[in-house]
Length: 128
Image (cartoon, rainbow, N blue to C red; front, side, top):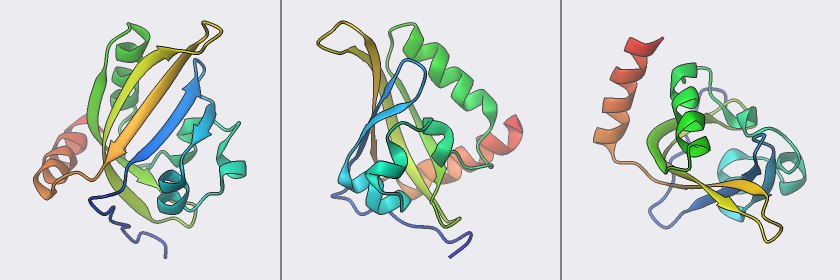
């Protein structure tokens, strides 16, 4: 299973929510089934739990800078699964507020195209 790619199907939509420190407060069923973690294993953990080592730190620095500025971030991200595999997503992250007025971040991820993945792989190699 290690280094095996898990491909999202077109109908899947991974949704998660974190607090302003990046700690997961919500994970939908698609997130759990793709990443291989249970909701209990995800909730309360940093979202970096699914960060793949191939992803350059600069990509996440850009994501955090963007959402903390109140803007929407979009990019192609390689995440890791619990068993050491990986999956690519077209991710959109944005800030929101809870009913209590606390800042939270919501991320929605869908299947990227082959072209988007190839472009991202080339770009990330230049950023490492």
